[in-house]
Image 1: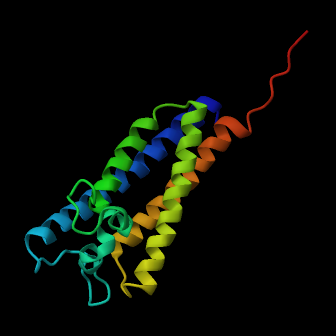
Image 2 (image 1 turned 135 degrees about the horizontal axis):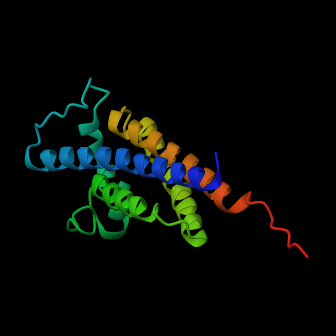
Image 3 (image 1 turned 120 degrees about the vertical axis):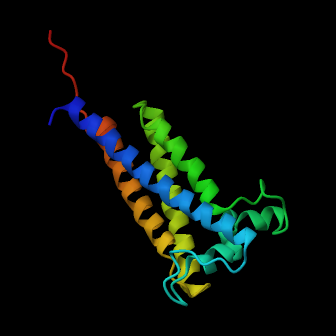
Length: 171
């Protein structure tokens, strides 16, 4: 595969990962909004007592990853303590838009952000297992998407900037 075709394929894969992440984030936001309106709402992702995304979304960690409440308090307004799905939706839209550009600084920023979000997934996964004692199908799907996202962005950065052959000046 030549360099332009490889670059195009990399951008397309990154955009598909963003679309998948956006779809999952929008579903999570929809469930959270339904839960805010009706506390008895049961989502499709609730498969059993300990396999329940609504239990996770109802928890303190369902808004701002449980981190914004430390800064602003759990009773703060919607904009200071947004649902995780809203944050994810904005993230994926921005990443999708940035995937059309192959600027070195943007690829590096994508790599740094994907590392940070992967660390956030480890944090949330730890909370899911050891604090909430639950299994959230939506959360697990997002963790898979973020792992694929990191692998794609890392590969893209390597292909575009780390392993480019050095051009030899012809005298």
